[in-house]
Image 1 (cartoon, rainbow, N blue to C red):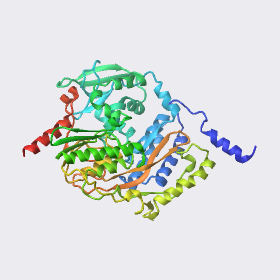
Image 2 (tube, rainbow, N blue to C red):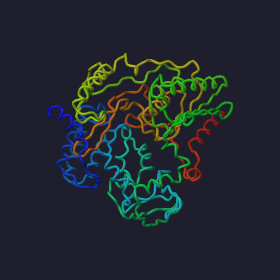
Image 3 (cartoon, rainbow, N blue to C red):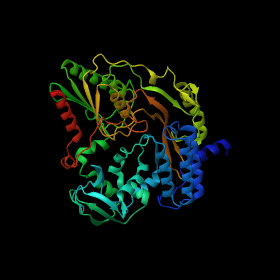
Image 4 (tube, helix red, strand yellow):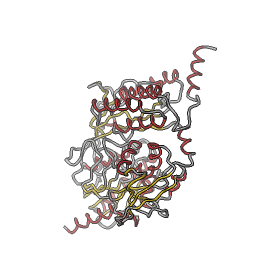
Length: 509
């Protein structure tokens, strides 16, 4: 057989070599070290956000920690947890580490070992978010298997990445996936001794819960008590009328809700064009009807694509603006191509095709300075955009939550930077001043088959500096408002009620 053809066939089929399906199976330290070495090289060579929120000393220290952890590790789960911790430590919500399909499927099939019920963060407490079980609805969880919940939860943060050192956004993951994260960190558990306090009680009680399987836990999540209120945090929007809406509350006040910016994927997309016509019509209506107070609700907006966010902002500003002040990547050519899985083609064929993508990177980021490759004024990200003629000029009340991320947080940050905006709600998981985004790269670690994704464009958003906005955090509201326990029980919107009261006070004054 021709050697070249033989090599191509080997590379094509090597990804199908049988791999362990057991998440808790033994895994050699030698393999761990090989994959850890590659993981670190990928970050150093391709991740422009590696030192965005962390110093070189901190990054060196966390990898020294990882090396020490391997000395104490013996299973695949141990190694997965090390890599998840490294992934989260960098501080980018676009970072992710994920299991190979075979291992993921083995978890789905597990019939026991999982905490049975969902939990939720309400009034600074982790409460049981399920009705009709041996623990009363809304009871504060104090401990599980003799470990305080305050110690458990931070150990699970590593599975849900956010920008900077933000932790509020991690609640979105924990509210839904607490049991899976607990299993991933602690292993399968047959019984759970739970201590709790019922709402408005000072009595500490204990109960033993039997574990359930993976699918049974998620069945309980689907039947969680809070679903009528928080279902939009976990919704994929398919219809246009689910993605955005406009409502006039009275002669002076209106609500504009934007649940996602997945509204077509480019400027010529018919869905995006339909959205721009919709925007123009509702803002013309506001101008015609002299609306003075506009509530902009982005609490369920996890992102999407340009230019949906930017076009929307052009109706809410009086300044010229661009998407970024600057943006850069850390490589001239995609590194570690052999392990890159953005294309499933064999390596030698991939090597030929990647020239096109490298050329596109070099054209988009032509300026070399400070060890990176920067966009110049020809980039569409630096296109200066003007406010629309019918842009809203009244008072804006921006509603935000920990769910807001990516293009959603970029838009929210720009609106929050306006002088006529009052921000209400909870800190977002997406950053105010910038993030790593736009272009993701995906790699497989060859020994463990773990996947790792990260976005390579380090960008500084076009927002003003504000005293209450912190570089390494999400967008900080002017009024921090959480759902109250009573409103949790009634599925009512504490934040919207607060905004409406704020507007009424403004009218009286």
